[in-house]
Amino acid sequence: MSRNSASPPTGSPAAVSDAGADSALTHGLKQRHLSMIALGGVIGAGLFVGSGAGIAAAGPSIIVAYAVSGLLVMLVMRMLGEMSAANPASGSFSVHAERAIGPWAGFTVGWGFWVLLCVAVGLEGIGAAKIVTGWLPGTPEWAWVALFMVVFLGTNLASVKKFGEFEFWFATLKVVAITLFLALGVLAILGVLPGTEAPGTANLSGAGGFLPNGTEGLVIGLLASVFAYGGLETVTIAAAESEDPVGGVAKAVRTAMWRIALFYVGSMAVVVTLVPWDDPKVVEVGPFYAALDHLGISGAAEIMNVVILVALLSAMNANIYGASRMACSLVARGQGPKRLGKVSSGVPRTAVLISSVFGFLCVLLSYWRPDDVFPWLLNMIGAVILVVWIFIAVSQLILRDRMEREAPERLVVRMWLFPVLTVVALLAMAGIFFLMLRQPDTRDQLVASGALTLVLGVIGLVRQRRAAAVNA
Image (cartoon, rainbow, N blue to C red; front, side):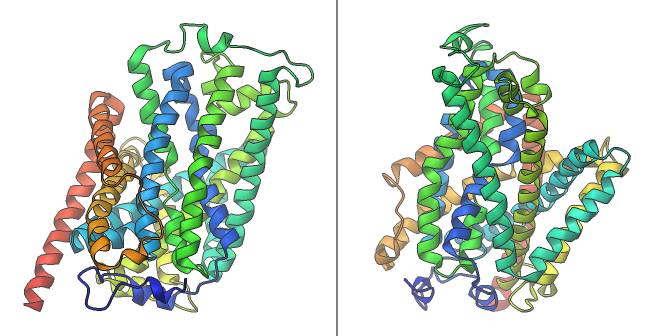
């Protein structure tokens, strides 16, 4: 299917898109790039490091936590895939929210996601710099962050193809690493790996049982697992710059489904089967290191540091890309300063620069104001991805009915059991909000993210009403 065949019918009430931005961008991403971007989005530093806190809270039941949150993410990605295959756009869910709910919704979710990605760029830069300074003590962290920023600024300013190649190889390294880990883990569990004995179910049922901290621990593990899945959305943004946006996003979304189960749920099952959940190393140095160390893999710490560094650098690269394209799309729809949307040689270079500068500013804040401003910034983005998922679900609920009436042939990807599973997903998200309110740490995140969403929503409504008054 050609790119033009995915455009909304002229005159349709659904004909809201960032076609102006997309037509100026180049379409240099190939299917292999999209497939690896989808894979790379699944495998992040949150899996390699952040999952340790979830295991410490939930014990072996972390498998259930990741399975439940993984099912929710599958539903969200299916909904997003349906809308993105029908209407590929670099603004992705922001464009869909604007078409379904109104300009204020596109503004709110688009700029909220932009802030999330920019802050994440800074966090990932800090994390990567800490690893390198561990290898090269005495070198300043800020200098490494600056170097990483310059490198990925360069790749994103050059061309979308350069970004795609970097992400392809980054994702390939992560896939190879986690595949080897799973293979070694399964062999050890079966007792066929030289030098190991089959652990059986001792670690799954011992030290307090499968639910050592009760349902409260499972809840904490569930909340930790939900936010580890962020990053999959980038593939639907990148699809708009691919050679075949419709076919590319459809294939990437479909193949991402089983990989979620394999990489996340599978790796958690391997870790808690091999290593006692209350082993201090699980939190101190990470669950993957703890498992490799348990298997007697020499140099386990350095192996994992290399893998985590690759994951962090990959995320920096992808988030600069995603932030710049989202900003460019918003500007093309009249939702931001025009200068930010300027495209040169197929690249929104001003948006790339501003997104990178904002990310580096977050790094500086971590040094200047580590006790107040920086923690507040982290809390502010804590639940933004959940807000994005809610807008995706509501948009799909509205647009699916509209598409069935106006252009059913464009439903290349269909949400399963519509509208039942869409409603189930929305109820699950509401349940996660409720659980976050019950936990002191996540409550602060929810309040701060809610405040950001409210401010953006009010600004979006004011802008929408002003535009309506001008056009009246």
